[in-house]
Every structure is written in C-alpha cells, then in structure tokens.
Amino acid sequence: MNRGDLAPGTVIANRFVIERQIGSGGMGTVYAAKQPGLERSVAIKVIAPEDAAKPMARRRFEREARVAAALRHPNAVEIYDFGTHEDTMYLAMELLDGLSLRSLVDIDLPPLSPRRACQIATDVASVLASAASIGLIHRDLKPENIILDRTQDGERTVVVDFGLAYILESEQSGRLTRVGEGLGTPDYLSPEQARGVNLSPACDIYSLGCMLYEMLTSKPPFDGKHAVVLSQHLFVAPVSIRDRAPEIQIPSALDELILAMLAKSPADRPSSQAVFETLRLLDPNAPERKGQTTGDRLHGRPARMVSAPPVEDEGVTMDGDAWFGSDIKVAVCGDVEAELALGLAANGIEAVAIGAEPESIPLGFLAVFAPGATAGQVIALAETGLPVVSDADPGDIERLADMLRAGASEVVIHPCPPEEIARKVWRAVRKG
Image (cartoon, rainbow, N blue to C red):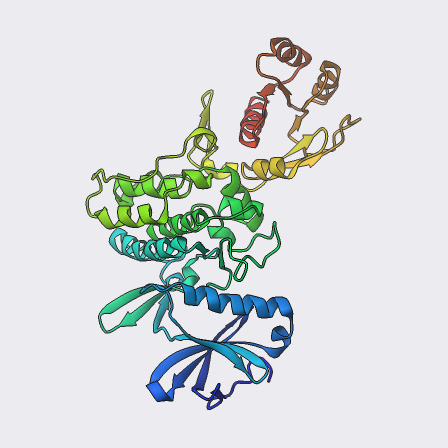
C-alpha cells in the first residue's frame, strides 16, 4: 500500500472504515473514517510503508501516539487507538469539525476581538499547563495547529499535532531530534529553539505569546525573510501592542503579559498556569484596567535591545522599518561570528568579513567595524573615507582616546553586544 492508496471503504484494523482523505503532511496522511461498532466518526492518520520502514520515522510516529495519549485535556485532541495494519502504521483520533485559527488570523484579515483572542489563548494556556505538568512540550504551536471545533454547545479550542512534541527526561518517549536541530515555524519560534539549545515548557509560552500578538494585530511580532525573523527572535525586543496599534484598546495588563511571554530568556517568562490564570481574570473591554500580571517587562539586556519604534539620536529620527532587512553593508576586520551576523542583520546591517588587515575596502560598504585594531590600523581605515567603529575595554581611557585620535567615529565598550555595535554603526553612518 502506498501513500494515498486508502480508497473509500478500506477497513483498517477490522474496525475503522475509510471515508475520504482530509489532509497530508510530512509524517503521513489523514483520513476521515467511521468506527461502525460505536457509530463514531474518527480521523485516521497513517504513515506510508516507505516511511514506516525507516526506524527513526517509525519511532517518531510511535512516540507521537504515546505523547498525545498521555495528555488528557478537553482542549487537546483525543487519541482513540494506535497500531499497525498490514504494512502501514495508523493513529485513530477524534475527528474535528471546524476551521483552523490560521483561517481567521492573517496579515490580510482583520484582527480578532480582544475578548475572543483571550478566550482562545486561555484555552491553549490551559492545555500547556496540563502538558507542562507531565513534562510535555509541543514545540510547534502555530495557528495551523489550533482548531476551532464546532460542537453542539458552540466553539471548542483544540490543540493538535503533537508530532514534534517530546516528554522531558523520558527514555521511552524522549527527544528524537539531534542536538542543535531547531524544529518549529519561524514566526513562532522561541529564541532557544532558534539556537538549538535545551528546551523547556517556556518555549511554548513564547510561541503562544507570538500567536496572541498576531490574533490581536493580524501580524506576528516579527516578520520578513526567515533569517531576519530568526535573528529578531534572538536579538530584537518586540514592540508593545499598545504602541504598535493603540486603536485596538487592549488592557495594559494584557499588553504587559504578552511582553513577558515574549521575553528572550525562558526564565523571564511566566508559567503556563500563570498565563492561564491571568488571561482568565482579564477583561478586554476595560482598556485601562490594571490587572495583576505574572512576570514583568523585559529586564537587563532584553530591555535595552533595539526595537521597532523610531530611534532618535542627536536630532536625527530613523523610521523603525529602516532597522530591518540588510539595508547597509559593513566591512568587518576579522571573522564574523554567527551571533554577530544575526544581531546586525536584525538591525538592518549585513556584516562581511574583509580580513584582519585589509589593504583596501571594496565598493558598497558604508562603514567599517574593526575590533581590536591598533591606532595605526584605524588611521589607515579612516583614510578610506568610511566611518570606523572600534572597541575598548571598560575603563580603558587610554585606548578610547587613542581610537578617537586615530579617527574612529565610534568606540564600542566590551562585551560589545550585537545591538550596541549596530547602534554605534548606524550612528557613525548618520554622522558620516
């Protein structure tokens, strides 16, 4: 049997009768089916034989069944059965009747009302709280994986597709991806997923924060090409909704909660239970209400990051859009590490290594970043006519003076975070 060969009427495991195909994806195909003995409509997900023959794919599919069955929650899809039929594997689950959240939320669609957005997010947070209690992480929360199921009692929010999920510290159901392999959708990817480091339930909170932001504004916190979006997740602070879209009139407590959910550090984000309780207490129809939020605004380095509001410096105002998308090229004397490249890209700067001691600088560059340069090297670089940015240790007044005397336009103080280098480069370019 090949993928797509389950014709209507096919009987799976002597108890499920295939009716029609309703979807397909990287891990299998989904069919609507009937379970005659119980007169129950079900969804059957199968993995094709060519994939089932691969040990890793088979383990992923088995793991999905165990993981999904371990989570019992009214807002999580219910698993009925799992097994092997002939030469393919199947997973039987409840058949949902409704639209995905993606069909209601997109850049060309009006935003959801604050009340409805909070109701959906509250349901999702409740699922995440239950998942976290058993060490379960979804890892791919996005509008496509939220189904608004139509029931006799109205609408039911359902979280689906735990295919990328794993249970923490479980030998039987543990992570099956390689260390450093970042799974998930870029628009909703947490910074730690982008880095490929160890994950926790806090990564799902970040994804939910991105979704809630999009539900309220029709746009995710960051947009653009994948590489730019990833770098923004890593280095750029999100703009508060009340600043980005004041006409929406959301409570300040909700705005602050979303910013806390989007904290760069997992430790700075509220727990899923705290998000659930806060959302349940909020009244979106009272914009000025000061609800009690769990978690604060960004602190430390995240609070200092470049954000999208206009940046003012010495009377020059730069529109926030100019900070994104590789607007200028900067020559870097020496190697360009990945974190520096991503951090500068997030602020509209393409960093290109030109060697530690360049004899000349190609056309097209608007500035030079020369970390560790000597005064003589800065003099030579400044003679090209391009603004030069160098560095110095904290308190090293002598080097700072030497760099400025040699012609450096700006000096960055160690440890030289990418956003500070970007700020100095933009300032040097504007002054030049």
